[in-house]
Image (tube, rainbow, N blue to C red; front, side, top):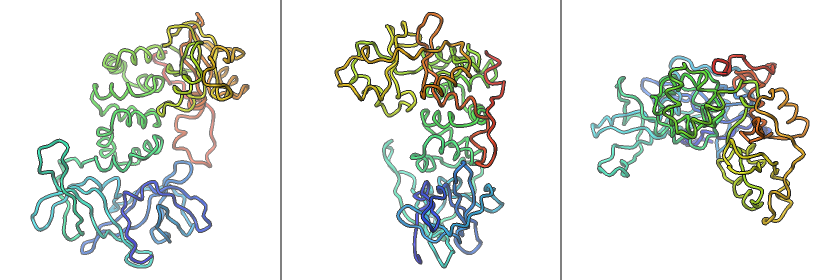
Length: 428
């Protein structure tokens, strides 16, 4: 493996295996320490193992880095990673930093860092991939890129200048929302807020939905009201309602007024229900069609990539109007049933009328029993006039039943099925 050179940004998300070929986890960052007269030395990898636990893997235990995968000796200390003084995370802290060329030719921004094996089990930083400032006034222009060694550049000592988060965001672009949320929470507080401010609204909304409510509130508190409202617009209404319920009442009301009227209306409706009822758990954005719609039309709707799988598992059939609260609820057509019929078949002739919807006031326990008894992933929710107002999905129920800190619990810790009583209680 002598002479192997790897760019750190490409390591993010790579799978780590033991010598037997069993999957250990995924790389989330590379840890280095600075030296006075030599390039920074790589001390190890930060690896996320099952249970969302991040552990330290010494670089000396890495036997191979090739083809997007890392092989270790298999001996990993599963103690949760804690950063020590002098250690620097490349992806979280170095990418995006400003540097100056020692020859006085200007400054640049670090976009990637190459590490290279310099001996058995010993790695160090070999090159920096940097981008100079753009020279053209065009908004689409970019500065020239170049490679530089450790001796050719030095980091700018400007404590008042925030580090650029653009390259860090690009590194996280392929992460799933849950992984992005964990990655953000693992950053230093200032860096986390900086990255959150630079993320697109929809991407930040996805990450917030996967975070504990206390962390959601902390990030939202650092955003201006207009930006916070834009992010809430992109969240699922039930998640947005849970988050707003944790905010001070006056700020929650300000954000509701700044949100898009349709989105705010859905959130206000959810806030009116008690948290332990079907109305408090449901989402207000199910797939809804008329009885005259065809199987082909239904399949086209549930095929949308942005639709969560649980919502795409079934189509609700109602009388007009087709936005919650709809006309009278008629029945439901499950995805698997649609696959058994030709594209021109009308939904009204194949819908399941044997499954009774639940009322918005039904308890969470009743909803859980229905989902478990009939092997369902969602159940429709109606109001007193039998109009469809939403659906409760299996992930809504699990999120309610699991403890608030379930995302950070270890696999060996017992899981208790309860939910803190404070959830949305102030507004229920």
